[in-house]
Amino acid sequence: MEILQPNPRPGKLSRVRWALLALFVWAPFWSQASSHREAPLIANDPLADNTDLYVFRSPDDTNMVTIIANYIPAEVPFGGPNYHSFGENIRYEIHIDNDVTTSGDDIIYRFTFTKVNQDPTTFFNIRLGQQNLLTTYTMEKSTNGGVSFTTVLSNGVVPPPNIGPRSIDDPTLGLNSTYAALINAAIGTASSGEKVYCGPADDPFFVDLGGIFDLGNAPRQNNNGKVRDGLAGFNVHSIAIKVPISSLQKSGKNVTQATNILDSDFVIGVWASASRQATRTLSTTGGNPSNSGNWVQVSRLGMPLTNEAVIPIGMKDYWNSLTPYDELADTTLDPSFYNPELGLYMDDSQFGAAVPAFAALRIQSSSLGTYDFRNGKDGLYPLKGNAALAGTALDDAVFGGLLLPGPGKPRSVDLWPIFHTGVPNLEPYQLLTGKGGNPLATGKPFMNNFLPNGGDMLRINMAVPVTPRNSPDFSSLGIIQAAALGITDSRFNASNALQPIPNMDGFPNGRRLEDDVTRIELQAVAGIALAAIGLPYDDQLNGVPVPSNLFINVLQYSTGVEENDVAFKTTFPYVQEPWRGSDF
Image (cartoon, rainbow, N blue to C red; front, top):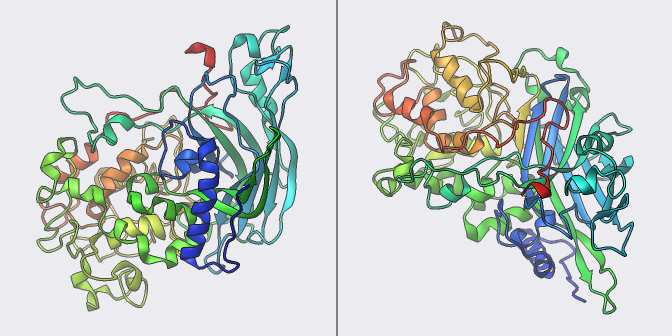
């Protein structure tokens, strides 16, 4: 037996030590190879490992928002006899912040899972209509920040692993079903109105992992164009909920009551977590372990790739132990956003020449002839206190203390707020269309998901219209494509009036399954958001609304993997069926 004794009133450091110790107790029991391995400790606990989070207005029912939290990375479809499943004694939670005037979460969904072996006499997972690892769940909901929970769905059904046709389809030996039918039967409705699916799914994330983690070799160089979606053919376990917008909006309003398509009252922030109890006691007689003690957060996720590609390895476990609300108040991790490591490989005065795959990605070093956004430079800080900032988001009386915190922190005006507060519809965070070369002037609105009372969350403005998936304007580049259309397309660049530009509903305004977040985040590090709001690349004069060669290079950059290996479903839960083990 190993027992942890946390400080009853832990400060940040003692709380982190407690979380790390708790995970060390569990680490030896789940060591495996996987991807999405964003932090050293959680890499050894895949059942509790958040892999991805998606939040988007449901394309087939636009009065609803779908939230998908994925766990258990890189599941091999043929991984028997002990197939992947949600873990017992884990609290899987989806957290929602919808009110800037309240502290902490406003809504929490909690899922806990129970497993039963129906036929322990066989080593097969499914035989003669019986399932081993038969999994059910309880869904609870809190609307008071976790003070109390109400059970809103009991005995929810989790489909079995998609083993193969004999196990699933065979009328005698198997379950006499189809996998599509098992998924449909597992979709439930909570008493509070949410549609729910918990179960296996194709991993919807797509990226050339082998290239990216080989020191930024994406797209791969001198490799005859060979690229590979590192997650193709792997599964995850999804928790998907489809929620009425009126249930998520702080005052119960539906989307038709929004004042406009960027109404601040319709912004929510979402993050997901997994927690374990602090003490695990092993049985000396082969029985199940027992668990006790306080619950310790061991994993969390909001924006994609934050912990994988922004936070340095020495701080990754610390990041996982914090809530977004802790993180916003704790400036320890801010330097990784002010001066992102990836920026060093997009700067020829640093290591840019050594990473040829990133040749198209170059950061402004003399924007408007003055402003340098490369690592260690001052960005817009020379404007601090300037009367020209009055009334803008950079005004000290508005958000200047957050966005211009000091010299040598160039990305405090773009990367830091994108990850920590969201972006307000306020100068200078409007498209350069209509600004006449002055980035501080009023431009064309294209984003408002500002919710500044938490740190890293996936923020979405639920009032923004949905871009139909079959529209010729639909793009996996999300807000990047919306900005490009707002600057260059004659349908949108004739004035600075607010218009619904296609893909305003894309990442980082929420995250659709189709969004190429790796590409978007690399483009953002390369300064494309700065260029879009009127801080041009060095070869563009006066901020005129005509893309420069550098802007076009950054916009056209690709890692080589731009879509998932299988198409997504058009109806809930939208993720595709898990890969079948017998097909490999």
